[in-house]
Image (cartoon, rainbow, N blue to C red; front, side, top):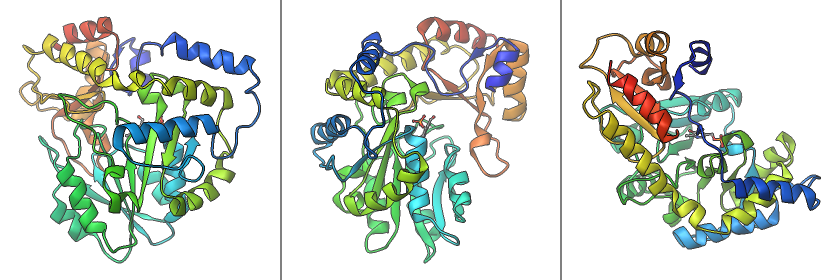
Length: 363
Ligand SMILES: Cc1ncc(COP(=O)(O)O)c(C=O)c1O
């Protein structure tokens, strides 16, 4: 879609990245770190100041303790955290449960390690998890369950009840939980993010994968991190050490300084809620139907009142004929499915959102 968007000079609401810059203070902090000697390898697990700042964030936000020495590793984006956690535990013949529609990096990592992906399908328009279906999917081969809250591409969030169900289902098993929480700070309408770390039994078996790219508007820097109790993190680091060894050092130092000011992430829900609300207000008289996204910076739009085309066909046609790029929801499933839904990214300037809305209102 990015490729097509470029080719047709379309407004690009497809891939998930901001079309605005990160805070110039953060950029200055990277420059400062480069001039202050942070130009050689960082420690394998990451710059200690950054790990300490992350530990502090978990204490403040979730009253949950991760030890910076043993429980936190800085990674090349959440993607590498996810790859390392899967590679550390999933072996040939193991099964990994994921919830579809799902972000695209889980299944290839599972397959590369000889594992088998077991997909639990979430159905629109609510995309709620039926925990009985999950229970039925669990067997002796189940090594891992991957969750993603808030969930890309559908903009849903797991409730406390969901996490308690997951905790109950995995209690007294050897199942590892990998919780992709890259949108933890992008939750709307007064809801709070429910991290696995809030549930002690669940935390004991869980990895949390997180991304500074989503939180500080710098997806191109590819810095993220992973938290888990020591026993799990020891295994994770055996992969991380020979996968990348360590991550870009000056950005880690800059992120440590920046993260120590909590407003930088506490303001994020309000910032993105304004964008979501602006976008939805601008298109409220369009022929698309929607339920406001509860989290992430993605909004699903249902086009069933407009056409009965497949979502891939429609997405392509909108790029070519209307110069507007989105992502068809069906590509996040592993089977033929058409919910008549397109995903739009609203991590864009107000001007971009207005220009996109002008097009949407003509469809
Ligand atoms: C759900 C989800 N997980 C992980 C990632 C990857 O994060 P990063 O860019 O930090 O590797 C993304 C990026 O879009 C995502 O949406």
